[in-house]
Length: 205
Image (tube, rainbow, N blue to C red; front, side, top):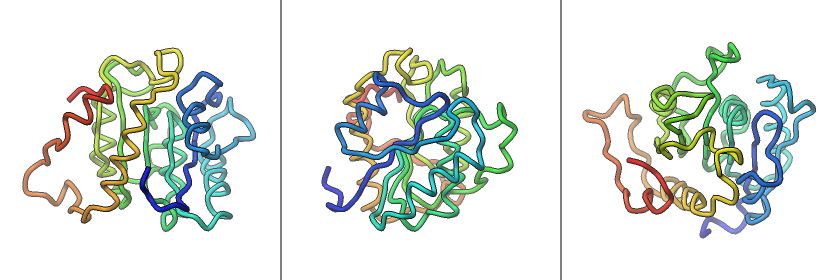
């Protein structure tokens, strides 16, 4: 990665944490990343989980990229109001449906204002692909689909997921490029601009 040398990565797991075979654990090791810890991994509580993201970000002066999965994506975007100046990018993989937890109104209803990529799946039991697209549009996140990838976890075959690391380079490019207008302000919908990179990472367009 060619981001500034002092950039750090923060892993934000979802319900029941990410076990030893999960791609988040592999990435934590390969990137030298830190992990947000929750007091109770079995009880998704937006306020408490979000507070733990804040607690993991704020004491360290370095800029950070949040790499979140499932309910961890919701905790991450909720935490932005308190940590946004330090966050250089967000990778939001297989978000859980906010409606399942009754927290939709507590989440941002406008562009996040930070480079972000939301990765969805056609067969995710926690969030339909159409809803994932809608969240990405609301947050002005780039949307990518992995196709038939379940919840993008160990059970659906996502162990090391080395190709997915390309998405961090994609975030870097977004951070360095001039910030575009939010989608809702554009005259025409944007097209995908790098299909070759996405296909190499296993994405469907």
